[in-house]
Length: 330
Image 1 (cartoon, rainbow, N blue to C red):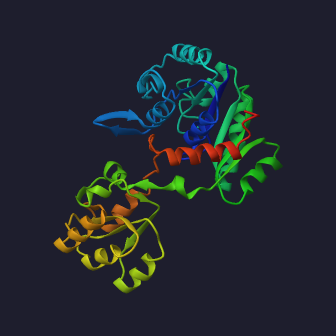
Image 2: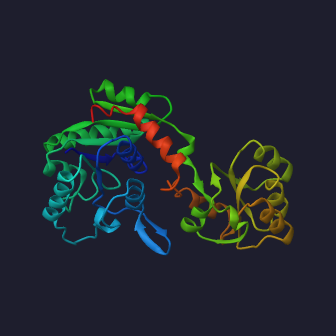
Image 3: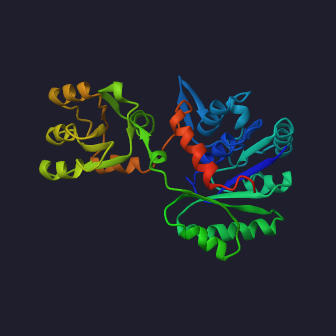
C-alpha cells in the first residue's frame, strides 16, 4: 500500500486534477480521501462536495461522498483527529494507493490539527505540493518547505501546474527544491459550461436551453458599437458575451459569430427576434440582474469544472499527468 498526501500552495492550483491524473494512471486499486470539504455542487437535486463527487464517480469508489469528505471546519468545533487518521489508515490498507487531498491550501485546518502538515506528520508521509506556475508563488513554496521542516515533515517534491514558460520550475530547482513534474497549460481544461453560469452566478435561462452544455472558453463584455464589437467577436471562439439587456443590436451581432452563451444584464429580457435566433442556434440566453460590470465581476470566481462523464476531458487529464509528472518517483 502507498499513501500520497497532496497539498495546494495556492487556491485553484489544480490539485484535484493532479490527484485524478495520478489515479487514472495507476493500474491498481485506488482510494481517495479529502478530509476537509470544499465547494459544493448540485447533482439531481442533491448537494455533494464537488471534488469528492467527481473522483467518486470517475473511479467508481464505494461508500458515500460524505465518507470521502467528512469535515466542514467551523470555529471552536472539535475534530476527532484520531478517528480521521484511523479511517485513512484503513483506506490505505485496503488499497494499492490512497490519495489524500488536503484543504484549499496546505495550512487550512492547522488549528484543528488536520492541515496537510498535520496529516503528513501523523501518517509518516512526505508532502507533495501543487502550485500553479505564477512565479510569485515561489515565496510561498519556500515558506511551506521551511515550515514542513520545522514540523519534521518531508517534502517529496513540487508539481507545477498550468505552466507556460518553465520559469517557476527553474527557480525551484535553483533552490534545490525537487520538481516532480511540470504540467503545461492546456486550454481545454480552462473551459466551463453555460449551465454552470446558472449554478454559480445565477440568473434565468429565457431561450436556447438546449445549449446549456455548450462549452465556453472566453468571456467577452459587449459595451461598444456594433461594428467594433463584430470585428472583435469574430476573432474569439466559443465565447460567452455579457452585454446589457437593452442592447439587442449587440446581441444579434454576437449570434452571427461563434458564441456559446449570451448573458444579458439589468434583468431585461431580450426581444422576440433575439429569442428566436438564440433558440434556432441553440445558444442559451441568461438574464441576470445588476449592471454589466457587476455581473462580469461574478465571473471572476467561476471555476472550470470537470464532468465525470466527459471521457474526452478525462483522457486529456490522464495524458497530461502521465506524460509530465514523474510517477515513478511518486
